[in-house]
Amino acid sequence: MIEILEAGPLTSIQGAVGRRGWRHLGVPVGGAADAWSARLANRLVGNPDDAAVLEITLGGLVLTVDRPTRLALTGGLASMTVPANEARGIRAGALVRIDLGDGARGYLAVGGGIVVESVLGSTSTDLRTGFGGFEGRALRTGDRLPVGAASARTALRWTGVEPAGPIRIVAGPHAHQLSSDGLRTHPWRISSRSDRTGARLEGPALPPADEGIESIGLPAGAIQLPPDGQPIIALADRPVTGGYPVPAVVIGADLGRVARLRPGDELRLATVSMEEARGALRAAEKELAALEPLDAVDDDELRWVGSHE
Image (cartoon, rainbow, N blue to C red):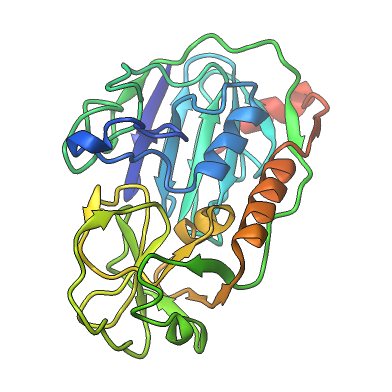
């Protein structure tokens, strides 16, 4: 059992894959905003890729466990008790604090997964509609989350490398009506109005499209251009359809990097070909598998973790 002692600004239960197969009925996909990091956290503790994890926003989460437990923290947050990108065993009663790191979001996986009911094929929380996850809402102080039986797999450490440099984009469905040149010519900043629905960018306003745009299906990473000329990158909780022009789309391999950006962070965009985008996705999958066995933490270190925040 996990007990939430401090819930932080926004902590929710999410699966990496989200709620696929229901968009035709108006149900968003949802799931982890940074699916790559959620999958990595699960692999480190021996869970299936889509086991339920905690998505933590801007740190501030404090929890405890009632039995010896294996945890893994990935993404952009930090913890003294659970080093990033490796599985760590903690004792019953240990306090785990997740603090602000170099990114907006982090993912905490527990060996055996968090046990919640699957709704429409997913454990992910739909925060807008209020279903899935834990009572369809963000976690609160005092919540208690059941945990499944952990596998006997060896604890692992990630040894891979994440991509760096500009966020890569490909041409969108309205590229012929609205050039993506303006997206690439100067840096953008992440707006404080960003959330799981979309990363709002701030910079010089771009000109609108010359003609009206019919509503279209909205894929993850779609860069929409509303009338104010400030682009929005569609993230996990994006609506099923959108009526703003989409001159470009962030490639799948870089979408998690966008989701980890904090308000005020700067980013640049760079165009790549579809072939390069597919190659980047293959490379991301290869890096996800860059795991090695982790030596067991000795008893003295476990005792230290169990007696400190």
